[in-house]
Every structure is written in structure tokens, then in C-alpha cells.
Amino acid sequence: MSITVVTAPYILKEYDFSLTDREVAAQVEKIISENIQKNMDKAVYSKLLNFIDLTSLNTEDAPDTITELVKKINEFDDNFDILPHPAGICVYPSFVSTVKDMLQEDLEIVSVAGGFPHSQTFIEVKIAEVSMAVLEGATEIDVVIPVGNVLSGNLEEAYNEISEIKAACREAKMKVILETGLLKNVESIKKAALVAMVAGADFIKTSTGKGPKGASLEAVYVMCDAIKEFNSKNGSKVGIKIAGGVSETEDAVKYYTLVQNRLGEDWLTPDLFRIGASRLVNNLLTSIVGKEVKYF
Image (cartoon, rainbow, N blue to C red; front, side):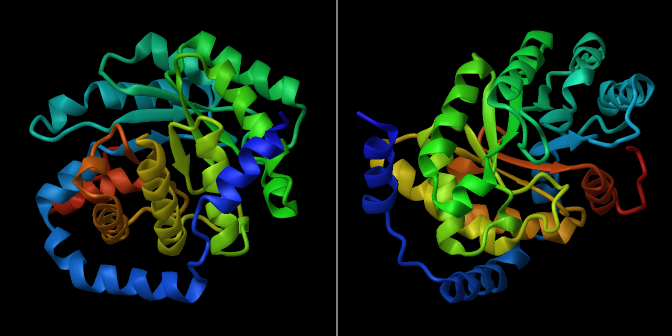
């Protein structure tokens, strides 16, 4: 039986694609306007700290800059002893061993891999890079769905590729980046989300942070809708990671409010909700302590 026979009915027939872009925009505005104020609270800011994958994905990254970042994580409790530390640290594959050797705190070691950020290389190269990152000590792998295949309707190829990468992840969790800023509408985002989940994604993620557009509330609403429907059909809880341009406290609270409303309190845990960011940590700390903090 071909993958098309298995996946196309599962995605295109069993799932609801009636939602429109206009309806999504209206629902997002309603949810945020009615619920955000109750979450503009230091207790929520503290929870958000614990959802962050502290990210360093820069051209100029080097062992000494990553070492300095890990050192600050190790000393976080000494400086902010009553606050939770971030959930993970996200780096390029070549720095995974640096993080593993130095990290003293209980954080996930997250590695982008598989031809990040464009996913434009041979599947053999993607699998090799993922395998090496896991071998070096990565506990979570962030990969990019082949966006071109999604846009052209070649869901079978996208499914096959993500399935192969999932196998290469072994015990590491796999987060699949949809690059929602390049997907044209609600239907494309939901298709990408469902392909990723059917192929074994532990999380679906908005963006690489390297594309023309980052995360959006509308895209996250659609992803939550897909996760909720996927869960209702098979009982699996897939996490959501928001990345790409989330740097201000209020922005983070908006995404928190949306996930809370669409998926419920069960998803408000680092096991199911992450935010990929760097500047956001300092801004959350500033909002909590009441004065400017530039720790990271």
C-alpha cells in the first residue's frame, strides 16, 4: 500500500478544512481581547520562562560564545533562585557536544538539523546530520518540513522524508518546523501540520526564524486546531513550539493565551509548549523583577 493511500485520506478526508483565513483572524482577535489581561501577570511570566528554548543560531557562533551561554545557564539559579530556568538550549549540531560537556542544569539539548533552515539538501545528508546530532548528545531535534512539497501538494514525499528523519532521531524528540510564513493560507498550514504529526512529530513548530516571516497568532491558531483535532482522533498529544520574532513579554503572553484557550491547561507545560527565543528571556526577567535585566 502506498503512502498516498494511507496519508491522503487521513489528512484530506478525515479532517476538517472548512476554516477560512477570515474566520481565523476574527477568532484570534476575540480570544486575545477577551483573555489576555488576566494573563498579564508575573506568575504567567515565570511560567513562560520555563517554556523557552534559549536559542543561539548565529553565523558567528563559535565554541567560546556557546560556552559563555551555557555558563550563564549554569549560573541562572544563583542569580534568579526563585525563578524557573528555561526548558532547553537550541544550537547548531556542531555545538551539541559543547553544550553536553558543560551543561550542569536539567535542560533539553536541542539541535536544529536536517539541512536547517531551508531543508534543501539530500535526504541522506539530512539523516546523517540528525544522526550525528543525536550521537553527540541532542535530546531534541528541530527539522524543517520540505515546504516546497507541501505547497505543490506532494504530501507523500513530505511524509516520507519526515518519517525517515523521525527514525534517525531514535530516542530524541522531533520538532517539525512548518515555516508558516511561507505557507499561503489556513489550508496549507493545516496540511503541513497534519503531515508532520502523522509522520511522527512530537512537536510542530512555527518558523525557523530565518525566513521572511516568523510566527503569527493566526498560524498558531491553525496549528492548535490541527493538534486538537489530531488528538481527538487518536489520543496523541503533540506539542507546539512558537519561534520567529517573539521577543516582547506581551507577545509571549498572547501566544500563551491562545494555546491556553485552544488546547487547554494540559498543554501549558514544557513537555507540550515551547517558545524559541533569545531576547525574550531578558524581557521576561525585566517584567518580573521590575527593572531592566540583561542577563543573556
